[in-house]
Amino acid sequence: VQMEKQVVDGLREVFQSGRSRLLQYRKQQHRAPNTYNTSLFELISIENDIKLVESDMADWAAPRPVKKNLNSTLDDVYIKPKPLGVVLIIGTWNYSWAMILQPLVGAIAVGNAAVLKPSELSEHSARLMKELLPLYLDKEMYQVVTGRVLETQELLKQRFDHIFYTGSSTVGKLVMEAAARHLTPVTLELGGKSPCYVDKNCDIVVGCRRITWGKFANCGQMCIAPDYILCEPSIQDRIVEEIQKTLLEFYHKDPKSSPDYCRIINTRHFDRVLALMNECTIALGGESDRSQCYIAPTVLKNVLPHFKIMQEEIFGPLLPIITVNDLSEAIHLINAREKPLARYVFSSDKTVFFSLPVSGGVTVNYVLMHYTVDTLPFGGVGNSGMGRYHGRHTFDQLSHHRACLIKSFAMESLNDARYPPLTAARLRK
Ligand code: NAD
Image (cartoon, rainbow, N blue to C red; front, side, top):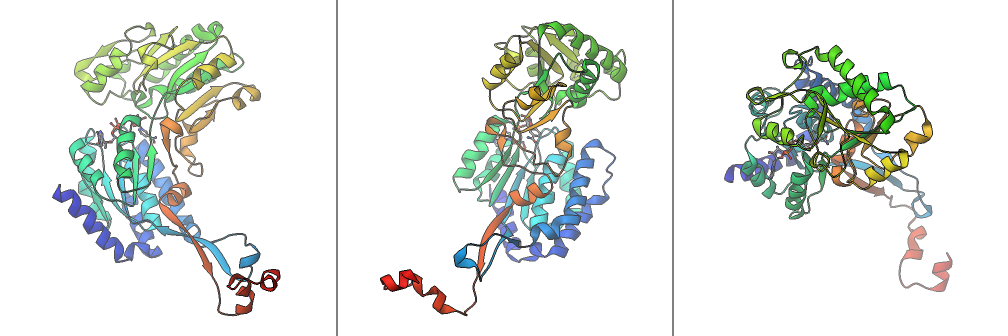
């Protein structure tokens, strides 16, 4: 308990020294971890964010003039982004580096101090992060705290100036509850069931190839993975067929021995994902091996909305297909559920993709890709989260936008109308 308090108190003291606010300091901190091996898929997005911040940070940090009103014509009026103070960043296991380092890039860019809490489930990454980061970053300003749920709960008792949390909606609520005790603002990057509507008027071959890539990458353990497919009954079997062909191409006959096919994080999640298959008709896959936490790429057909698999985010390599009679039935089904983090639609008809209900983000005729554009805000809505990040959006999210007005001492008579006693003559002025 003392340890968590000491870390946060220490960071607040260092933050108050002011060194993290110097532009040169922030640039130097960004360059330092950039020497990591970025060959890993996950690290590319971090590197891109660092590059963008490096080139544009001075513009983002500069005063932003605003339109003036009559009273302020002669004044300097602008918004100045300021650091918030000490930020807590809590990450997930599925992209254990990106979910911590991407928010950190923005926190550094603004000039905040930060406590980083990587997930205990990806314990090797957490340990490595704790070991490596102090070698590159100012270790007094940015600190990694490792530990399990108990340690995270202790951290959450401390007063932070912002909490940036990535994880499940269930834990997101606990984080927000803890933050409320100190009126700390939060960014919640959560998950959910991201639907994928496949229109009969689309290129089904290309569409299924893309869906197969996005669903089974990292064994489906991705917050914006397409969770389930909605389509008309007439194309269900074609979709299964095309996914089967693509799976053969990507992972060959035996995905278990493919170096490109991942595993489920642990046996708890393995059991959870496997149990979701219970009521379902398996169209493809279905094999598993608990000793390796292996679940084959699996497609389930004729799934019904009340099945267990449709009640929670799958976060695994199971792809249910639900048939609907038309687009409006699909929209109705989506609207009856929590607002998801992403929505996908495959169609050649613009009226189809413009009719999609609200979601954190959307990619049309592909999956996942809106995440990779660092000028787009990434974040959820409703149950899938609040706040947004990536590039400039992280900078804005982790800064206070101070309203500034600077007056000169000249022309005091212009202010007279404001001062008592308020006579009719003064008001007319
Ligand atoms: P999780 O919510 O179980 O854990 C995330 C973090 O919360 C971990 O660091 C953990 O230590 C901490 N935690 C867990 N239980 C806690 C508790 N009771 N009190 C305080 N802290 C607690 O999530 P996960 O299993 O690591 O990740 C999967 C979830 O994250 C999925 O729902 C996925 O969609 C979501 N996710 C979202 C994004 C995004 O960018 N929106 C990215 C990746 C994952």
